[in-house]
Length: 286
Image 1 (spheres, rainbow, N blue to C red):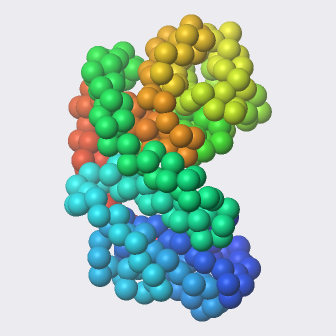
Image 2: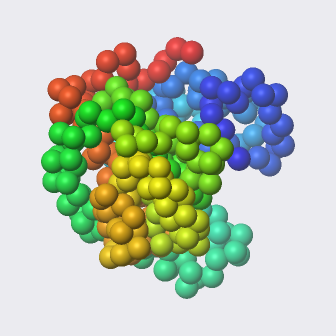
């Protein structure tokens, strides 16, 4: 289960003594996350923290610790910490799969090779910076942004929308692509930018179908797919290619273009991308 720390304590959660609660906090001082941690410990659950700041409160009070080790995160809107957390959770999943006998040694090795290949693949994705730097001059005038993704890429759509809100102060929504027809489709017109994360995976065809609905209603489409995808490129105003990657590694690559989009649109609007208005680096009060 994935929970919002700010909601967790008020849902009368059921935690058995063999439950593991993993808490994620860049600063290790986030008030609602700390409160959820303390509640879980009182209920007898084992706790594991993923933090970037060693000896922080959450780091000290958790039963086990994993460190992001991504250096000082200067920007209020975390980027390095997000990518580090993605990588750590992928490693943790592989480790748990091996312990439980779900993954073979060969599968473990294959997954680890995929993760170890990330740095060079991330360098390739960063080449999209020039595209967003140029496109930002037009994108800054958009009415709004709709980010779509399926499966593991739905949370990436949420993160992309969040980054644009944080940095550019523009209206943005992240949605599961399959939910588009249940409301968000009413927003789509020529002034709406639709950003779609659509790698070539087992739900690819369904995502493309959603994209065709967007095009039919005049939405401006920026799609992020895998390698030379002529089908996706044909129905998009702009197509950005990600390197071929394992399904659980792909979201780590896919979030980079969305971070670049937010950075360059915010810069084009003249905003301070490191210190956005109204935001604090650590939310230490509820």
